[in-house]
View 1 (tube, rainbow, N blue to C red):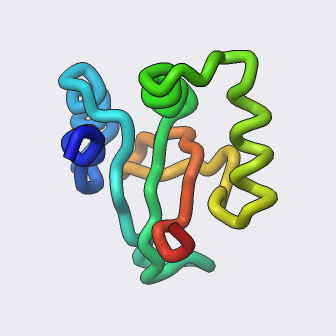
View 2: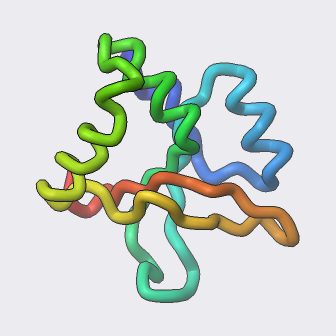
Length: 101
């Protein structure tokens, strides 16, 4: 339950996401309605929010890229950098597939 509260449903806007981050959120769940990932369950972090979460378990910033590489090798990481649109705004995110976790 410790980390469950840090993951929220897809925000309504970029501003909503920014507000949720200020309240402590680190990631959001979403299901794309179009594109190659249509209908897939995904989890998005900003680079800053993922680093924030990893810091809580003692993973230093110097190991961040190694962590992402290991996730990529093990099929957990979907995208290192993916733009998620909120109307005219977008968020650059690190995306994991919840289908493989």
